Image 1 (cartoon, helix red, strand yellow):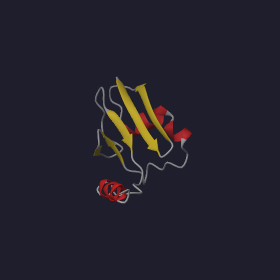
Image 2: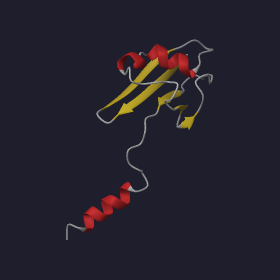
Image 3: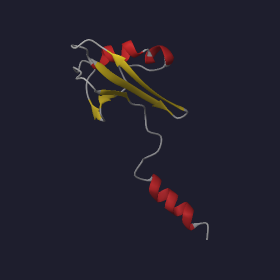
Image 4: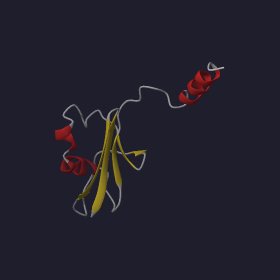
Length: 93
């Protein structure tokens, strides 16, 4: 079956479509994708992972078309970014 594996860093985004066995787990898809070789600093024992924006465990079974996601720490609270941008716009007057 075909699934996608996604990982994003500030300077690049990786989105890979790969074929995995019908009984594949999230961890198996990440390993097969090769992302761990590209980003050796990723540690699946501590890194949060998910499917379509929902946190799941590494042994979660996959379904055809799933998007496997590897998350990284957020350095800015998304809820405050619009406020900061609006404040910056007000300073232009």
